[in-house]
Image (cartoon, rainbow, N blue to C red; front, side, top):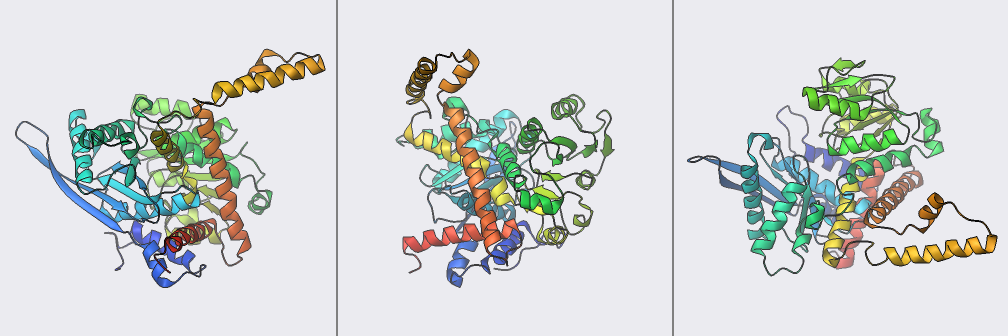
Length: 477
């Protein structure tokens, strides 16, 4: 495949993903043909369709759906609405989804979709028409379905759009048994799952927490273990960045910098996240927040002093041009592809630990998997066992009180007898997934002395798992 270049002659987003793949593939022993199959996208669907935007006017909409790997079914990946959507970006994100799912042991192939629009330029009825028409186009080409391809929210979309997709699918596929499973990230009332909205940000939090829990690694950075007291800069306070910052702040971290597209702010003594968000809503800008320095160039915010940097906005934010000025000792990639290969090379030479996107922001697809399972089973998690567990725990507590002659106070009693509800099980499953996956990829890095970074270890992990799946299918005997 010919190398893809952006207009500024930098390597494209998809080419960056391929570069990371090639670096990792050298540490595997799989045949070249199998690596080629894993590397490139299986199916690319580009479409255009007209949408009425006035009484006598139409706008032609450009949209995509890419399925990267069919080693597992269904494939899975979000749909973004943005004027920057193009085939290269969607291919890159689809590939990342394959590797992301493999790293966290979610049994999906990777996919991604996008519609090239600015949602702010359309009315609500127009957005609904665009979404429903896009869904109809996917159905016509068999690019959506609970056992085929399952979209989810992404940049510029939310539970609202997912509800429209689910309704359109169920209207056309009226005899489908599991129509709600055609898409995840839906409202709770439409078969969604509790905890999905904050899942990606919470996953970033767990990823960061696990990284700073390893004493050996923190000692090399000159940092203590644990989140408490760590100074953090966040780029992007959308869904992912906001919840990552929120959970980090609650764990004792100090948010010293926040960057958005209009600029950034910094205060070495700390910023209160919700106060910043409130200020932005009231003024329309993050700039001008009390006692904070303003940076009209948002990238400059990333270069300020901190312990941990979390880029949670868009791709290609840290490059060879600004990487030398990054002061963070640990970077957790909340966004997809925020660091270019050239930028990463500089950061690694400085000793920075990078917690890579294909692991760090996998919280969303993990909880989407739980939602998909819920839709297939047609029952809410916790519904059948919660009361039984509470009765059993109550009997144990009462037995302990009888044997000891002591009474447990009501607050402790309620804690001990609490039965797991859906949100409890979702959070437990997400935490276990993120914790296990981090130490798995770190172990690969520690075991193979030729692997110098967590990203390469993550790609090796993903490549091995996808390769094993293809081999087990008998496609490459």
